[in-house]
Image: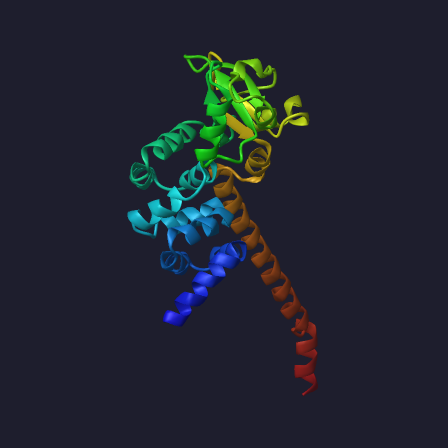
Length: 284
């Protein structure tokens, strides 16, 4: 047993994508049992590579503490995509166990339909006021888990989007000046209620790999990253997944009966005709 656990840990740690593909093909109970063997830091990457529907079925088999631990280690977009396929009661139980900031981010994303921009934003995108010194912004980035950000957004006291500044410009600037002196216009921004298809057509992607997202009236709530948008567009919606499953069963049924009919026809052709049978009987 100990040896099996060691191999499971090693496999999940070094090949999370391969582990995800294997788990998707296993019965749900077996896949969940495998995930239960893993610490959250290893289980979360495996969940990230799984189809949201399959990951959700596994989470529903795990106890709340284990499931919430894995969700806690996921980014908000991936975690939300999985939780959409979890029952409402269980979903609320899991979100309640998250740290306050994460819980708020998850609840925000879950309020938007899955085919809209608001459901896929990074709600932790850094926003600062215009009078913030460059040195303070760099320190916040250094201490933040979102250190991969390359755009910092500038808002007023009411969270209204004013502009943006790129990280490269911050690094070149004197630490004592304010971000307002480096601020650029955000003429390309997205509405949280816009469809993913409409967002994909934005000209802003030709210049930026992430675009700010606003609610009315221009209130900044996060940013949508282009790779996340592409991933979201490839993912079937809950209703579509159910329809695809039903359609797949229908196709399987039609294929079964077609093969059955062909076999039946083949058997019929092998049977002697009534006239041949009668002639043989008279010959005897």
